[in-house]
Figure 1 (cartoon, rainbow, N blue to C red):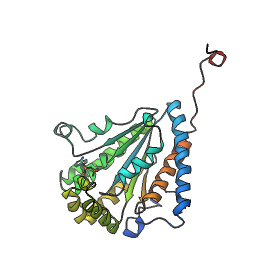
Figure 2 (cartoon, rainbow, N blue to C red):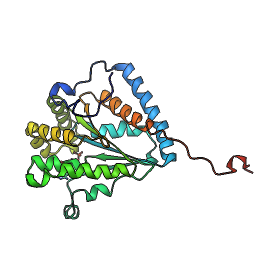
Figure 3 (cartoon, rainbow, N blue to C red):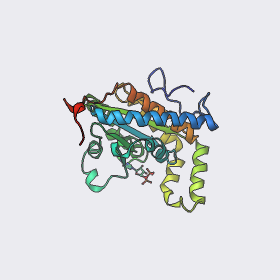
Figure 4 (cartoon, protein in one colour):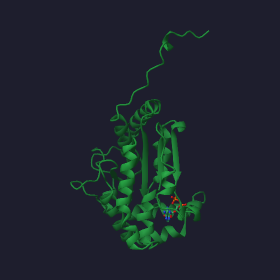
Length: 267
Ligand code: ADP
């Protein structure tokens, strides 16, 4: 199965319904399970040295429509790493205090420290997605945010924050199935919000907004990846492999032991 490729001019995002299906060559069944376990093992090992190395922070941004699998990625992919080196933030509708600041204020406060993996479950991109589609602020405000986001992320990257952004791309039919599941299963009812249906009704509006996001804000320092997300396990494999590859590329190393440590005897 081909690796995920960052969105670039030469690799524009594919956001049709059929693009949410597993890519050609994707494994299934036991082979898929085995492939995922291998990536999970890689991630676990890489995170250990990432934490010890301490030079970089890793920020993983997850965006996607309702029921696209953001929570699933956190549970399964990040579940593979030591929780001690991980920090998950779910961004909700901003509070009154948050709204009285610039839109990046609450975001910056949650950027992970070096040695740590930070995951954003929704993010500053809501400020050019839901905020745009639902007319929460005027166009002249949100349209300037793409550049502001790129500059913010550039500043972070200059400060050793490695940024990977995943848009979990689910098809209309698959989302319908998952939302129906939430209604049918009493233990999932709580996840259902009437607002989800409003967002679903404006499918095209969100597609347009997502297209702008991943096109305008995929940069060499903070790439966007569109993940075919109709199959949970394939989605997890693709995300896990991309994160592991990015960590590996950092050429991480364990810090040198203090002088004389190796000669110490424990009595
Ligand atoms: P989730 O759907 O992520 O599991 P919730 O059901 O609590 O969690 O939804 C969070 C809601 O907060 C979403 O509808 C999202 O669009 C909204 N939200 C997040 N950030 C913003 C923002 N900056 N402005 C307006 N709404 C936002």
